[in-house]
Amino acid sequence: MSKTIIISNRLPLQLQIDNNTIKATPSVGGLATGMKSVHRDSNGVWIGWTGLTEEETPEELVDDVAKAAQDAQCVPVSLTEEDIDGFYYGFSNRTIWPLFHYFMEYTEFEKESYQTYVEVNKKYAEVVLENIEEGDTVWVHDYQLMLLPELIKKERPDVQIGFFLHIPFPSYEVFRTLPWREEILKGLLGSDLIGFHTYDYQRHFLSSVSRILRHEVSFNEITLKDRIVTVNSYPMGIDYDKFADAAAKHDAAKNQSELQRRLDLHIDSTPDAKMILSIDRLDYSKGIANRIRAYEYFLEKYPEFKEKVRLVMLAVPSRSNVPQYQLLKKEVDELVGRINGKFASVSWTPIWYFYRSMPFENLIDLYTTCEVALLTPIRDGMNLVAKEYVATRTDKTGVLILSEMAGAAQEMSEALIINPNNFEEIADALKQAMEMPEAEQIKRNKFLQKRLKRYNVEKWADDFMHSLHDTTHKSDIVKAI
Ligand code: ADQ
Image 1 (cartoon, rainbow, N blue to C red):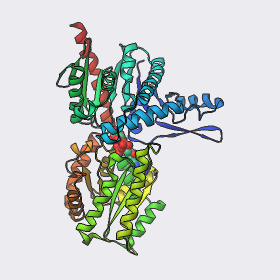
Image 2 (cartoon, rainbow, N blue to C red):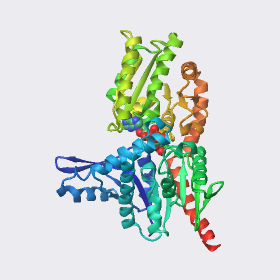
Image 3 (tube, protein in one colour):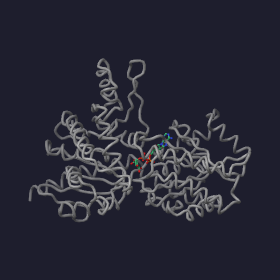
Image 4 (cartoon, rainbow, N blue to C red):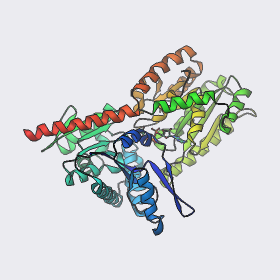
């Protein structure tokens, strides 16, 4: 029976060693939840790294790692510390991530880390090739594995390969600066279908393929010697019901979390104050420092809102081995300290800053309690937090302020869309959000919710898989000609 093999840098489960035994916990990110149903229904495996390096895994636990992965229908790729250094912290996060998010000044071009990226992509390919059977379909995810499609196609031309990029694809003028631009494009073209979140990323990719590799490109197809590669956009959705149901249960719950009790205490003490929420990984692409400065500007421009607002900012630690992330952490700490010092009164702290990951229940507490969400990425492939916030607004109140640089902005025009570099616009949007009548909030969120519910993550995965299966027919036609 044919199956779908999913491949991503990390597996949808986290392995840890606790008391010399392997502990597995499921990952909760967008990719893991999104692909859950494809994974479950396809009787296929998910291939990726467990989070434990070879050095961290004692010899006697190697079989237990494989067993824990197998129990979750997964196959681990074994990586060393050196691999992770060059492949993950190196080429993926110091070259591709900043370049594809237009942070040229952070982009490092290092031959050694590219070399490790090549070697690690080969390690993934080895595991994939060991697990492929005739008629299987392969779905590769994200920027860490852009060479993988070609490596698989070379050995198994019979296998249907899909690739989805979760981050933006930059314009040709930016992409062309990459010393390994041809290798990356050729790697991706091993796929039969390449998917992006938005039409713009798709367009940028096609333009790079036509200018750098000189392949014939028409509309959304690239013609190679022996086959056609289809390129299309599939805006990723969320598990809408999971968020909406959790929010409905939250509203009805008698036993509230400690966080919710504390939030309620503050609401009781200042009933006419509003809470503005922001949630992201601590990443320079998310525009966190700019957001704090824009909030400061808002308090200066509209001082009547002092003591009437509170910015609740949740940042999840991320890639803390990369120097830019350490600098950003310092910058955010200082900004929060400075602004709280400048504006705070005995009864009011303008910014509540949490630097940690939070359990799902607490995310729901924050989503459902805060009247405004302020998401200001400088660049963002999609931004699922924007969608999750809207999905949890059970009574349809709440205002979403969203950067036009997030892929999500293209589908969420009822939000207040801002340019994250324009403090004037952000301050005015905050004022508009504070004063927006409830009827208008409801009207806007009604449209947003309807769209998010219809095009949820399952539909996204289904659409991609259907298109991937359709590409078989196109390539058969080319072969027949
Ligand atoms: P990310 O950059 O990680 O993803 P995002 O899309 O916002 O960004 O997803 C973050 C996820 O983590 C959300 O599902 C959110 O609920 C969760 N999360 C955030 N803060 C948390 C916290 N403190 N504790 C626990 N969970 C938290 C990349 C791209 C995005 C793209 C996604 C999916 O950069 O642009 O939308 O992939 O393709």
